[in-house]
Image 1 (cartoon, one colour):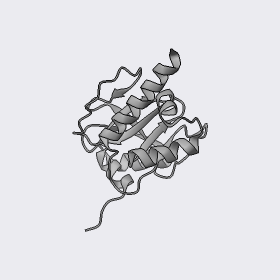
Image 2 (tube, helix red, strand yellow; image 1 turned 135 degrees about the horizontal axis):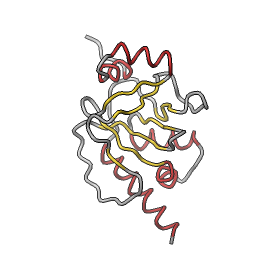
Image 3 (cartoon, helix red, strand yellow; image 1 turned 90 degrees about the vertical axis):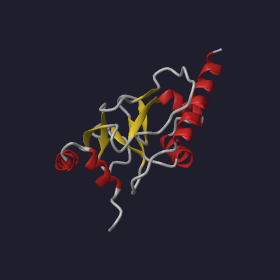
Image 4 (cartoon, one colour; image 1 turned 60 degrees about the horizontal axis):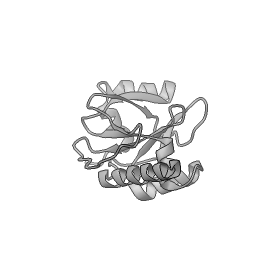
Length: 158
């Protein structure tokens, strides 16, 4: 028995896996409800930029790959990052960082096609950090990224 690819795993999270594949081919994105195999946290670009001290997409993606060790979606139009975390992952953090939110179960998340790895006007939702096998970002690493970014933004505002 072989390990499924990340794309196969994500498609299985869709109510109709064949529809997920069809959406990826036709539109470059499908909508998958979170909460079964994975969840996610919405993190505004400003917090990520502050945490990694860069606005360069290549640098950001490299730092996120190193620090979070899991797949991360970037919505370039909505200006948010979405690290994939375990559906049951505990996020023990005390943050007032504006715009940061763990997505509630059944929230629909735009998931890019497996081959989309950079922003274009036609494909604004893409993989900032791609994955090839099913896995999640570490919830503690996500919480730390948010705390650091939030603190740096707060410090810059004073």
